[in-house]
Image 1 (cartoon, rainbow, N blue to C red):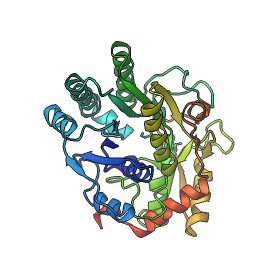
Image 2 (image 1 turned 90 degrees about the vertical axis):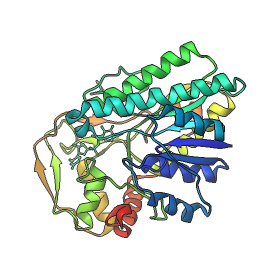
Image 3 (image 1 turned 180 degrees about the vertical axis):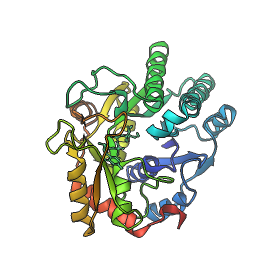
Length: 343
Ligand code: WQD
């Protein structure tokens, strides 16, 4: 069965390609490489021992999307494509509303047109959402019925796309939709051939720590150590990208099997602080990760971690990797590819 992955050359997308092939699916990567690198396709071929089909397309190009859907008639679509830097979204809100919301509208319209042509095929979609839709949670752990809010245009775009999907599901019962709310994806495939390759200065903690460990950056700035947490630094639900990829396979199987739509958290259910991550990374890499306490970052919350119980009940999925694995695999990728895919 073919599965179309928009943004499939990206960090989560590329790891999901491997997991889908290992589960017997035939993934097709659709990407415009605006925030990913063509070299990923060669790395994927080395991991899976086969060429992964590529459609070099921008999701905003609806007619071209329709052509891709018509030619491949995928059993399902996983929608990763979009911009995801919180800070950038504050500086460039229109880019985020256009690319993320516009891109989702374009994909949904193409899928709806395809459904009109082939009514026997139930449109099947997995959407890459984010824990950022919970805003600043009143307490932790977070369950899917928590109120949603947004604190930046990136999170707002995710929340609006979720609402579009809920309205579509109400109007079109034939659609089967899985909304996956990721917590903090980190780590890399154990081969060390694919991993997170942020452009410029990493916004996120783990890639920044990895670049300090490999000597690319002088030190880590810890954004605040006066939070109401055990060691004063921020606490997050870091989840191995391999577990996240497995969650997508479980979601696709559930939609193609039972056929009921769902919204689930993909997290470990366990929080780790910034300083715990620093210590775990030093242990995994054998390198020092010097840090300085810096002022809090605007928009940060003190604690955010998932109650992943619903994903276990609905999808039979749970995260299996611990923080040490995440750091070991992230280090193997970073030390083997100090400049990411740019060689
Ligand atoms: C984690 C912790 C920081 C960098 C964001 C998005 C979310 C998702 C994941 C896309 C916080 C601290 C960080 C640094 C630091 N992205 N930190 N120094 O903010 O939890 O989530 O990324 O889907 O949608 O909101 O992740 O890794 O940026 O921060 O001290 O240089 O690390 O303060 O406590 P975050 P993060």
